[in-house]
Length: 428
Image 1: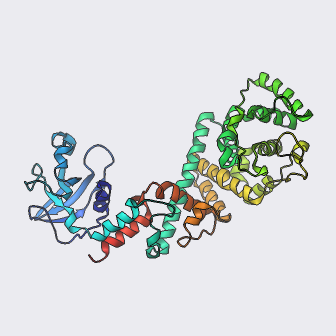
Image 2 (image 1 turned 90 degrees about the vertical axis):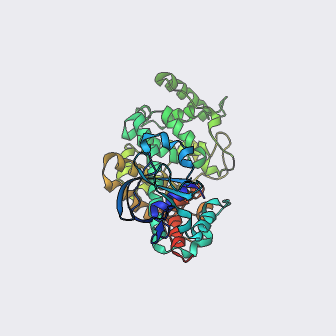
């Protein structure tokens, strides 16, 4: 038994409620278990109880053993003067009371199946699939939907908080949109590097030279630290010269080249080629905030699908040798979906949370539901339980696995709660 489970059992009353008796033999009826207290003092406040013919209202303290009351020195703490019931798993004291406070030994009233379910969920080592996998057949579709709704919002709000932190540091939504899109542009491998690049290369500096694609490329590649030294060809030489001028003019500071990852990546995802596409977008688009916030899905997809990189990058993925065939003229569908999921959706959620306009959050959820589901290592772990129908579902499954399953937070999960409740109601 763990105290967290004992709290959970008391809070949701996962025990036999008729016929409760205190350790001194008096009958107990729980009118209300109280409100969970996350601050200093007893575990539950404002509980309503009936002990014999006496009605009581006050706090409830929960421990594994009665002796923990003294072990934790509650007998000396003023915050525990309002405790009217001490709930324990095991009463291990000779006296029936703890400082005159009634004691309920709960283990006699809990179905052993609750503990078995808890062990299967939380105490088992997690290898790959969620710990509730063996019991998936017992979960109703309604509970699965409930889990998806909570998980996807928690995941999107988590992503939105990162964007709101960027807004707090720059206080400009246009700059925030630039950073949010840069982070997603780098994919998982180079997201952090792209974000650092956007922070060290302010959008207002690039905007001054929006009509000069060479100037934009020079600043981006120079700031990235990826410009080869010495230059490999005339294009590299031109970028180096341009960057030297802008670096001095705007007091720019470049990233180290070691920030970027090329290993085990397809050429189209190389950071050099992604930077060339990033430059093309910044030349093409003037208002990134409006693009992410207001544009319909069709407009966004067309924008990302058509990014004409400069002549040099139409035949190369890295600096140097020219390729045997031309590079893609735009992004593939999967990459576009990735940008919509990881930049556009969380940006709308972030702006909706900041402005209080729920319509943007609703717009973000509708966009997720309109996109096809992702298929990856994590979504495959849920096979046989939930088959994602959209990106809304797949993002929920990814979020639930990372935020709850890996951390074994089964007690706060809709599915875990359902299984524990079912165990509590089954016959002993």
